[in-house]
Image 1: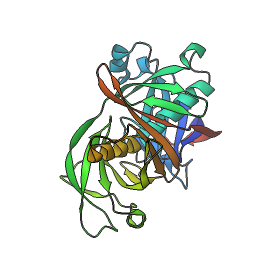
Image 2: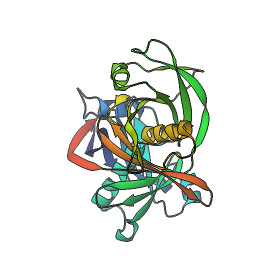
Image 3: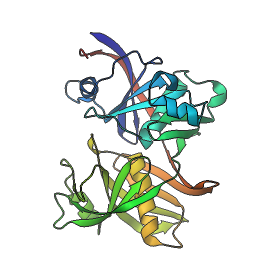
Amino acid sequence: MTTLRFTKGQGTGNDFVLFTDPDGEIELTPARVRALCDRRFGIGADGVIRAVRSRSIPDGEAVLAEEPEAEWFMDYWNADGSEAKMCGNGIRVYAHYLISEGLVQSERRDTLPIGTRSGVRDVLAGMSGYTVDMGRWRLSGERLVSARGLYVPRPGLGIDVGNQHVVTALANVSELDAVELHQAPKLDPEGDANVEFVVPEEPLVKNGVARIRLRVHEMGSGETLSCGTGSVAAALAFRHWGGEGMPNNWSVEVPGGRLGVRMFPTQEGEHVSLSGPAELVYTGEFELPEA
């Protein structure tokens, strides 16, 4: 048996098991991930994040070619044991973990480049949380969404923000609360994606900031209290639907709290950022099952 020293962290209720394995010596298998994330017999989490140096993992080679200073790679796994490309809440918690554990040099703490399976993401540490530049995004087509609690399928807009999302607008809060997400929504055409159900707050825009509320079903984790990339996708979808005149600053209420989303121009095109809290809850040890 391997004894793993871990830290439990969360960002607006999206929770993670984090541990340090700089040289990639621990064999992280789907079965081990499921054991760590099991909320009855394990630690319990929406996912596992391994802190590993980019040079020590095959996926990190492309990261270092893109940004040589991206020393650390976010090796993120969903609760069901599947590998994940990106997690907006997870990368903020990961940055907080790297800083708290003294794994990054002090001069890198203002803007920290982190490797992910979706490329390098820059994270900025602030007074009340972290902001991550999620990079560029793109529309990825329309799909029909069916879920228990909805009487008929609803149109959804595909948004790619490093992982795939389908955003569906509902009529009101009562309809949002009625959606049952213990089972994955069905998509037409089929294909893997996180699915967000969203309603606007009243009024939608207040003091120049647009406000929406969402629930989400995440691939590999089920319904979660928060989804960072899903909040970004939902804000982008609502701005797209609203057309010209819609603001670039958004406040997104998730069951676990609030997140900020901002769209801004860069030389390579529009980027979008995600802001929110990150907290390390406790540390402990866990006996990993045999690989």
